[in-house]
Amino acid sequence: MIPDLFSTRGSKQITLLLILALMSPLSWAKEAAPVAEDPVIEKRMLALSEDLRCLVCQNESLAGSRADFANDLRREIREQIKEGKKDQEIIDFLVERYGDFVLYNPPMKPTTYLLWIGPFVFLLIGAGILFFYLKMRRRQIEEPPLTDDQHRHAESLLKEDKGNNA
Amino acid sequence: MMRFLLPLAAFIVLVGFLAVGLGLKPREIPSPLVGKPAPVFQSPRLHEPDQILSSKDNLGKVWLLNVWASWCVSCREEHPLLVELSKSGIVPIYGLNYKDKPELALQWLSQYGDPYTVSVVDPEGRIGIDYGVYGVPETYLIDKNGVIRHKQIGPVTIESLENKILPLIKELQG
Image 1: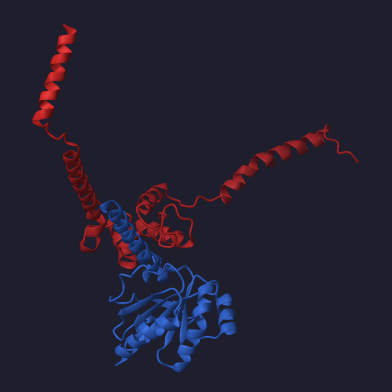
Image 2: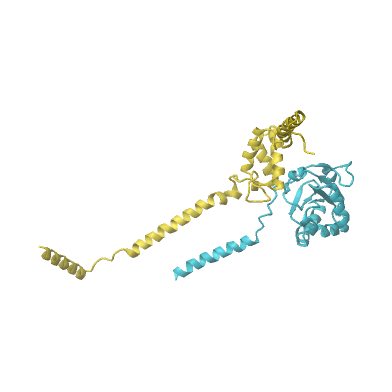
């Protein structure tokens, strides 16, 4: 039997269906609960984890990594922010456990001197080599002074030239 | 002459660096916890979840803490060695069942053997974070004063046992 959509009973059904259809986004809204309740905490957590290295996937930051381990550490950071810890305290907490390796911005200390100063040392060495090389080259391509014979020859050539022009 | 010698020297230096680089293990990050007191944990036992084990109970003895999980493939690699080590009775091995489901963990142990004096559970990896665990398996050697003396990252091998772990245990027990 074809449903009688145009009878009064049918239009009531349609209205009901429409209401139900409109209500469904409301029910979704509840299911898709936001990952973090507090955007402020989330923002601080993200800012912090940008500068931290994920130890499993070593070329990714903690903020960018999808590894399970990174998830755990992000949860830890989030919880510590909620407890009211300062950024530096949280970083210290992680360094205590994972070492300076978790920092993308390692501190200046004897073990990292080479890391920090190395590039400048190489730059200096390179600049030095370039300097001496150029100096050496200049000496090589310097024009040797003319002998007396060549001088006289050159002068006579010049005179000849002037005479022709006149 | 220099024209050939210089590039050759540079090449040899480069090869040297690359050769050393090949031998490095960038995944093994030295733990800052070696030489420091082992973080204290209290956690339910895997076999008797209503009983809590405190790491403080182990003060006064040398022990190994082995982080393992049933989902961890390399754990199976080291497992026979651990079973053998526990049979020798040289050192008690405590297990930290890391981010695992108890039923899977128990099944895994009954299948491959249980080398652990006690296993405790760490379902959310929180004890793991305290110990700086970032990959399973990891094994910590803890002395009588509760200080971490060695951390083995990745599976325990015969070489690492014979060259490092066993001599250190002997020294610490002495």
